[in-house]
Length: 330
Image 1 (cartoon, rainbow, N blue to C red):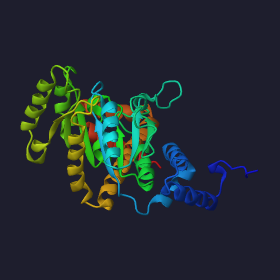
Image 2 (tube, helix red, strand yellow):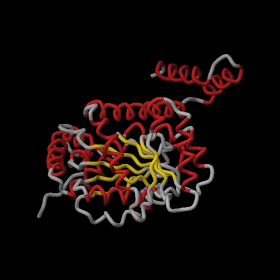
Image 3 (cartoon, rainbow, N blue to C red):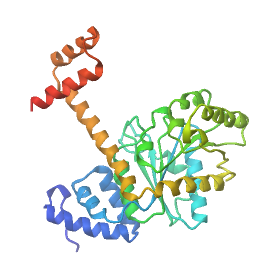
């Protein structure tokens, strides 16, 4: 009979460290059950997860992290599935974090993305994990960064993140990925206009998916025209056409990702991982500020709100004052 395992929050730091080292070794060995458990611990940010992430730190930063984003209806999940098939054809492995909408009942991921990745779900060289967006407007949660470390430690060649698909708000992906693929498709109405001031700015590669549909050529030229208004490197961002269901254009997309990826990998693992750490700090700071505002009394907030209305302070200055007052009160 195996020894009953205590909940991690009831175990000593030494016991947690020992369990974390054991789990980390299994993750590095590529054990799928260990990878699944490590991802769960990282997502929940359990007491064990902190020790686990410390145990996994050595050698991280080898995997290229590729982000797929774009408006709903662009066929992101189907294109990711086609890209994964191309990676496997090349002999590369991939860990996937598919960000799905949050279930209003369970709070977990609805799993819509995984249902559209059927051709690679049973492939030993691919590991797909769904992650609930939990209402984060940036398209990701901080858990995604911790999960990237787990998949990196498991020695996947590529780590793919697919965002939930809420359009222009999904800007967080620029902070945590090495290569950003922005996907559009014909027939999405005003989505191209909306993307011009948002997602187009972060895209390393722009894709017109469902290129076999009417209007694809028009969408392609709209994207090219939008890029002509950019300066520097962004003006030369490649625009590709794909049809994910048939695989047309997917090999060219994979080649473009590798070309951008070579440049990003050259920066070194420490620089690339530091970018993700900065994102975590910024998110934590934003959460702290939101918490301080919630805890502030109505009179304090109203006084600052009146200052903003009177023009004696900007909203930013009011926020700085609020934080200063809250910190002095500690």
